[in-house]
Length: 417
Image (tube, rainbow, N blue to C red; front, side, top):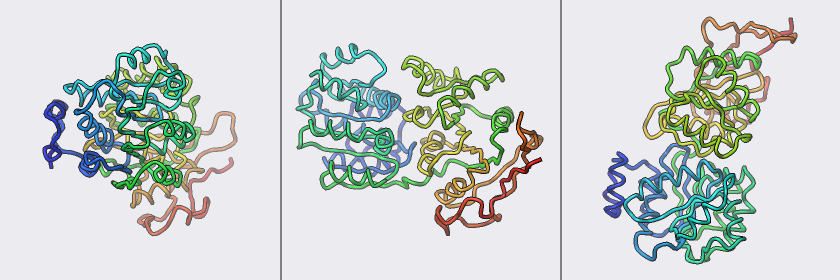
């Protein structure tokens, strides 16, 4: 299928061609017609499936006719990075339409945003907190709003934005089209969709399963050997751009520094950075000045770098959904990618859960020549070479994550010496 059956305006079609897009992704193919028909939509799809264009393209089409320089569409995003990414997509796909958009988020001065709003815009992409600041000061008139989009709704809940979203929605016209996109479907999302959406169409594209173009490998390792294993793995692996996830911002910052000292072009993206520093890190990573970006889950939301070849989970994610989000940063738009995950003794239950969502056993590897017996400095534990934590060939799909109790048959062990 091509984009032609959507009958998009020639100015939008020209921009699609200039971007090199020829075939819509499944989420685009199923979502765009419903949005063009003014239906409310609940879209469920994992990261990297072309979800942004799935709502940007029909949104541009709907706004081609009608009054200009009135805010007729509002897109809510959980992070500054995602808001900027959506803004870039609007600018690229709408470059010939004459439609104006503005990105509204915190961490930067309000004055440029106020000036953009005063000049008149058709689309606002905003983070909830800064949007409410502008609304309370009378800087934004949303009385002409026609379409509301909430992107990455599950992350909105994770970051505590639900009260802000409800405050915003109460001030919007009741008669509007509403679109809600999420990678997962927890109960909170079901309740919000019931509150906001009128007779919605649900489009679901394998939203809990990672994309098929990504290969998965587990690397069993003791906690104190992670950094050494990471350095050696990076030296031996042919990569282009690598995104590494840690559990805390302090660890992200420290790990990036350690990789820099080891000769790698690395930087971090975490909560201690100013907005200018965050933009510098993302742009440097996107342009190749940095080959490695070390980030936390929250900081990495909204990163859209299509050339990422590897995602490495230095720290195991807390949930299966977080794993899907992380590795969705590679293997994007029909590209292939690799996901490496470090597994300690405490991570075996989540490793099994990952196999359940993938629906197959995940290959486990050890790095030849790496010293897995190196003791912890100042400690009394010595690691032994990790072994399989389940029988080879076991079929995890026959069980649920809760069926397996930590320690039952696990063989990632530490022995006191």
